[in-house]
Length: 211
Length: 223
Ligand SMILES: Nc1ncnc2c1ncn2[C@@H]1O[C@H](COP(=O)(O)OP(=O)(O)OP(=O)(O)O)[C@@H](O)[C@H]1O
Ligand SMILES: [Mg+2]
Image 1 (tube, each protein chain N blue to C red):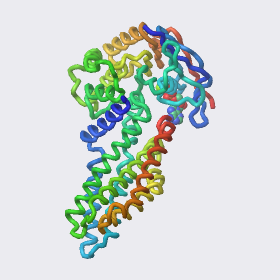
Image 2: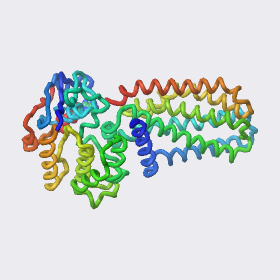
Image 3: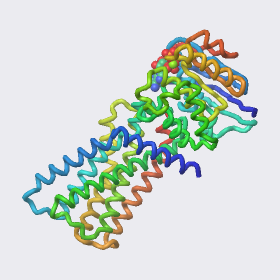
Image 4: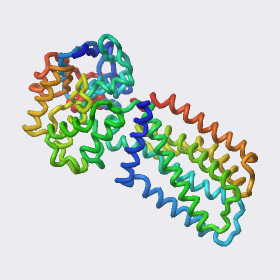
């Protein structure tokens, strides 16, 4: 594999005047895994959005490096997969349409169709692949988010509340995804669950700030 | 290269989604039909001059823009798909995709409005079709460009409705006034060169709005 690296420097986030976290710094390379833990409202989801590049930090930087070269901000989206309760797929489209449309927008070069089919099978939605996502159960929606996150084979995978709404089979699926990601890339898991946090080698604990 | 493909894919997604959900089109068509009918009824016994006709035309296009085009970003925000979109596309691609979608929408509605006036309004005769088409297209695109960036700005705020109207109104005044004046010329039968100065204003407005929005969008879009 390549040498992929995530470097976080001096990361600070405030919402209006409320400080969420201050001056976080760490770096992760292929094979690393990081658990982000902390109480409700401590900023786990906020930090995972910033790491995924969909929320701006108040200060500091999140940078991705491939073979020592910094990846441009516009290309970061091609290297990150994100599962989050704040991220929904389009309810008026089916699972297949969602994956197809989203990879067209991302202009994935890789052969998409086989991979989408394979992922839909893997997450167990094959029999319901042509139903609109709006009528899916919450667990089915969560499963589809995994297919979306893995579609472009991201080097870094960020999971916020990875097993919410999932049944046992779904949890096994997540564990398998986690195992593979730890082998081939970087894994970040934001969770309240101490068992899920144990999937990862490193851990940061966010504190609920008083101000 | 691929940015064009992605932009096209964003527009295609929105059109397809609109086709399935009729999120905007149905209520806008309803609005257009109602507004034009009321105008027809109110003016049934007057013999309208070009000034009045042009004014009536642009009033309807104006309120269509005011009511319809804020949805492009709000709908993503409400459905929680903003992050999804951010994960697959750059801000530039998203901005141009949404701008194009709004442009298609308003051009379609302007076409319907024009057709309704032509069919139901005996006095509505376009003497210079070329001038008319350029006026309505440039004016509508001006509306779309202003509405799109304001829609992006208000999508993340709480008092969307009011803020949209308040911010948008001053921006739409210019294409509204100039579009009206060149439409009058089209109804009176002026030549293209007589309307040229209006077109220049409309075209520069459009370019300034798009360039400004493009520069601003990065800051607006990402929280
Ligand atoms: N858009 C926002 N505007 C203002 N404050 C926000 C915003 N988003 C999050 N916050 C605040 O940031 C803090 C952290 O929120 P976050 O969602 O990151 O917590 P969390 O650790 O994921 O909590 P949970 O365990 O409940 O998922 C909270 O106090 C929340 O109110
Ligand atoms: Mg959270």
